[in-house]
Image (cartoon, rainbow, N blue to C red):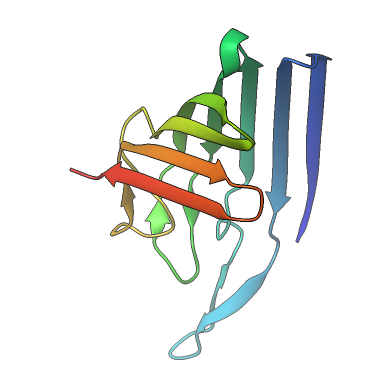
Length: 153
């Protein structure tokens, strides 16, 4: 297995972050498929996605608001312990609000995952559809509360 991973992080200000990543994987292996009546071989060259890439853009907005969008792409693969799945592009978005109450701080975020078409991850029966979450995080200076509410239709 050979490959390369690259990541580029650009932060033009303390309010803006742009992060891009890319990975290339080349699997070069084979196995004996059958012995009888003839010797047949096959390979694992498509057992992992060859290309994976993503782009994250995060922006802090005035008044404690922030927003981010994340694009992720993966090419098709015939997972060894899964199924043959097609390439997909996934888009996630987050709108967050940081706040303080006395000495405590918190964050309320609306999270949207997979804003595009449904796709299969690793196996055909693992379909990832659009999901929405409302996440509340509170820090009470020694007590930490994390609450997530979601709707999966």
